[in-house]
Amino acid sequence: MLKFEHVSKIYKTGTFGGKELHAVNDVSFEIPDGEVVSLIGESGSGKSTIGKMILRLIGITRGTIELDGVNVGALKGSELKEYYRKVQGVFQDPFSSYNPIFKADRIFQVIHDEFYPRVDAHTWAEKVETALKDGGLNPEHVLHKYPHQLSGGQLQRFLIARALLLDIKFLVADEIISMLDASTRIDVLNLLADLKTRGLSILFITHDLSLANYISEQAVILYRGCVAERGITGKIFNQPLHPYTQMLIASVPRLDRKWDREISVETKAAPLGALNGCVYAARCPLAFERCKQRPPELEVEPGHFVACWKVEKI
Image (cartoon, rainbow, N blue to C red; front, side):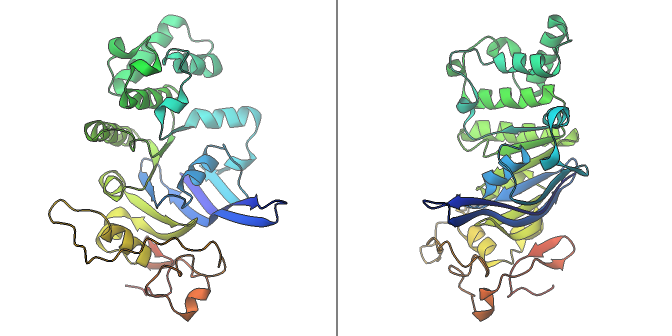
């Protein structure tokens, strides 16, 4: 299980670093083994920052991230290397993960040299072919080719196959299908669903609510670095309680009806202040005097948490 406990990421800004930008602010949630948890929010809400902290690409300012009870931030040397054997990430732009002057399957050789140097070439080639097949690729069609000779979907599956070679337990999937066409998207989503059945835990970072509803057991709604609402995906989507969650769901186009121009969806950006109060107050139609204080996460029903003063227990 991956566990976030009061995690914050603060950047120093301004000419002399006299100001602070809270990219992630006191975030807590859990990702159980074998489950997909969607991290949902608009651009700039801190989703990718959370993914990068899990992968140790950036440090944590406050709080702890634990994997199976081990503090991720304290890992060094061989322990950190072993952590990367268990935890991997796949990002939005697959082309940025490859060096265009090398063939795409060079990423498998890097894994071999770093983690499995004693495995002979023949055995390793068989393991690579098995991982590619598990990723929905035909090895004969994709091996020994340069990145520009493969599609975005194929490159994403290459990265997933690389993760499978490490026998990982946790995958950070950061907007991995946002650059793919519709037919390829569903193939990658089904691949992730298949990996979940093998016990893999996935943090699915997205701004697309329909995709989150399709694949995840739990959802975390993030706004300006703070958790607005979290819980079982079906409950959040069928009965959203936080005004921000309600706004997100109301803004999703539906195939069964024309867009209603009378639907009011506030999209004006909120000012970067008032960290002591509710971060959504400047946009919220229900805001009142008490919103100048930051609301606690209220468990309105078992496993369903909402950070809003207007919400009461169901």
